[in-house]
Length: 313
View (tube, rainbow, N blue to C red):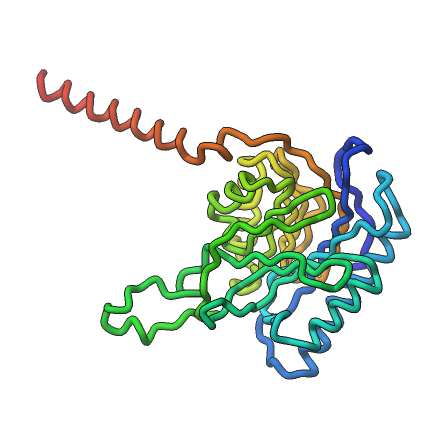
């Protein structure tokens, strides 16, 4: 198990800028869970133990004038299927931890949808132990979290998602982080530019990506998902904190540089400070793929012109 150590945000910032200490927990929860009570309790205690150790370490090493109680602990997307709203024991444990340690906690949770289904959500528990905000995953994994087949297709009703059948969210809810606001997106949403772009246009000062990349084992997909997150940071000129279950956890600045990258399939903890870095919005944040479409049209025009020229020669 990695020993938590304090790693300040890897670049200079203006001390007058409000900042927050962020603790990223990479718990390395195994994918082949038996689901029995003893195992789940042990894994929950692993999250809490890593969080408390890193929190105490961060409070012992104050930097940049950040108040000792300005902390956010982030737990990644996990195969444990936390269900904050449905599980009174989990609410009690997480709420007590937040209150006792004067910290906010961001965790992944299986939350009830308004239609009675389930949603893959990110839940922010504040220092009072209450839910401050909830984001429901909008772009679901095809055949993993939903089946993209029309129900009239023969046999479609017998096909089930690998993880389950989820209801997509519809709102780009920002998480309050003191003077900052964060856009949190989940797993494969890092591969969809429109998600991070929408959060930025809604006013996100920083982006957070929580993910569980352990389902495909030690394959290049882990670095591919990290690369997706790097693009999202650069496109929107926003620092991005990526927190995963099995790796790769990393701090990505708005220039696309990565810091404190974790090894895969190991328990690890990272601690950074975040503050408002990007000002305003980029061309991409405002206009999306308009430049790409324009280039495609110009290319199509040249191709068409070359065919027309050959036709009349």
